[in-house]
Image (cartoon, rainbow, N blue to C red; front, side, top):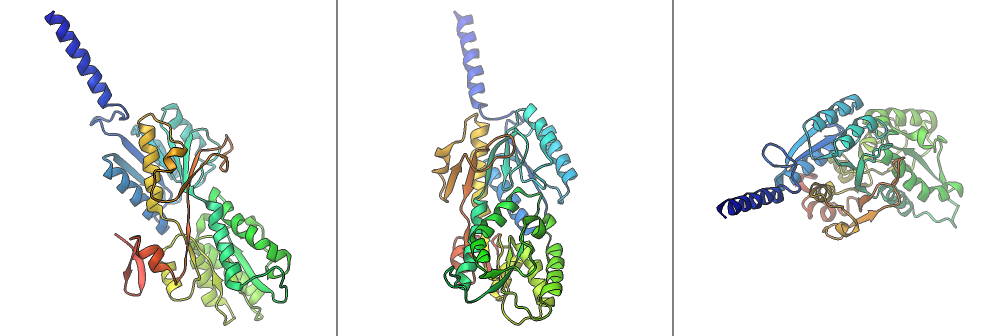
Amino acid sequence: MKKFISALISVILIFTMAFAMVGCKKGDDGVSKIGIAMPTKSLERWNRDGTFLKDEFEKKGYTVELKYSDNNVDQQVSDIENLIADDVDVLIVAAIDGESLTKVLDTAAEKEIPVISYDRLIMNTEAVSYYVSFDNYTVGKLQGEYVVDALGLDLSDTSTTYNIEFTAGDPADNNAGFFFNGAFDVLSPYIDAGILNVVSGQTDFEQVATASWSTETAMTRMQNILASYYSDGTVLDVALCSNDSTALGVTNAIASDYAGTNTVIITGQDGDEANLANIVDGLQSMTVFKAVANEAVVTVAIAELLIQGKTPDAALADTFDCECAYDTSSYDNGTGTIPSYLLVPSVVTVDNIEEELVTPGYYVWSGEYPVAAG
């Protein structure tokens, strides 16, 4: 009888220990490990993303390895290889080039490590479990709608023509096409009607794209456009820029090389500090803000369910304080549609910086300008 009771206690202890380990992989300390691969520190927004993700996971008690890859694809592949070798439980990857990670993520799949594609969709791999981002088409749509409203465009009134130039993002970033198409789809009816005129004639994404979202590349291209098409006094009314780093280059080019005296409408995206200062100073008109703190919260919630062996679904989207949609139809990475959690961006102008950025605690005032909180 004593032997039976002893055996029974042993069995109970084994099951108790096993139950306690459910959802935890198997680091030496029993704590799950999260691997995060960010593209670069050279763009302000990725520093914010990496910090928010690391902080949110650590608040939950996870061990975090955060790597930045200096916008170098080979470096990011190496970083991910190292994270896989370190036996992370979940991989969070914001890809530099969404087409270049197939092989390394196949290794993650072989080791049964779930992959969350963060902000940028990773293409041509079945390893991606979920995609977390903002509604990228809506980002561009908001930029286009801002231009329509700012100019008071009306398709029934063709008496006035306005000149516009486009600056899009990195062709290696799957999001860049969504941003551009969202804006162009809003504005193309006005282009077709002759109300908006692209003086350079550059309206294809390939013509207006900016490798690596480079401020310097955007600046050089806009300087060339101004020299070729606007040096005779032709007025530039709008510079539609897909994000803040390209908007900064375009703004610098206009400041140095534009012969006109009018204020050019300039759009952006991200809420970079330098661009917010330009908005306060009247040099940039708007930016589309994406609350990446919320993006981090959503990502952590998905990762936790995956670690627990559960399947995130539409119900999860209803648990967040922020607006979030569960989408199973929009984002196909070449191997099939990836279940996606999409947050909603907002337009920030000089009139609502306080309401949209400071009051929620994302930014604080430093003198005349908002800077990222913390």
